Image 1 (cartoon, helix red, strand yellow):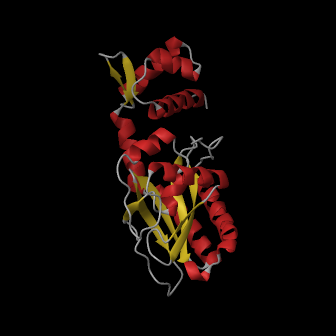
Image 2 (cartoon, one colour):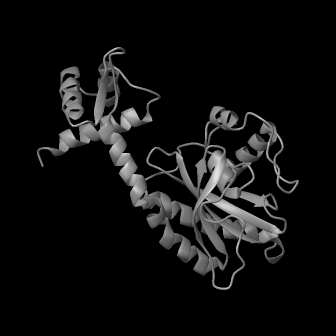
Image 3 (tube, helix red, strand yellow):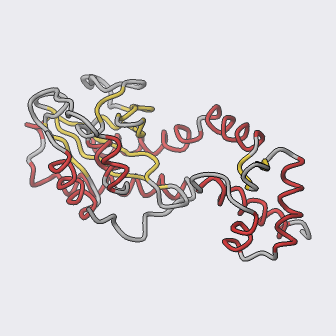
Length: 258
């Protein structure tokens, strides 16, 4: 147990470097973590010996090492996001009787990782491994709604992709919609991907409050009047919150202003 404080300090260093835009001076690491400079240098040296951090002598700064990359790669190989989300999606499908999907942002696109559906239910164009324009999908919009405005602007520098003649056609229109989505806590798309189908999505967050994934339910537009959408959205939001808890995350402290 005597090693626990040191382990916590090492983990704090990794989290700080992972969230930084680039390598940091040891003095900045010590200041941010409230550590004595001498202790910080000893800690960084020990972590560098095991490959978790690396020193850049030209800049006199410290960054993540190869060992940190290897752990991150192993995390992706183990597929924990899908493993944690699958039972939640199955329970949601049992409750609402519609197709549920898990999606993540991949640049300016939504990448679908999981799909659960009731027996004898018609399939969708958005299947596992499929990518769709994020501004047209409910899942993509639910995640974009919690990104900084500058990042959204960088993701959509040019003309907007159109599939059915519906959906935002400009950055200004998209940002208006995202502000509303962030305010109410869920997103919709109504015929943006496939005519006659609508979707509702809610976002899950990591330990920094960053949008990590989104859970979406898709249904035939004619089968669910719009006045019933908030009730369905509440069930989806509850499932997304459960995934946030499983990820050890938390919602952002305040919605991003747009």
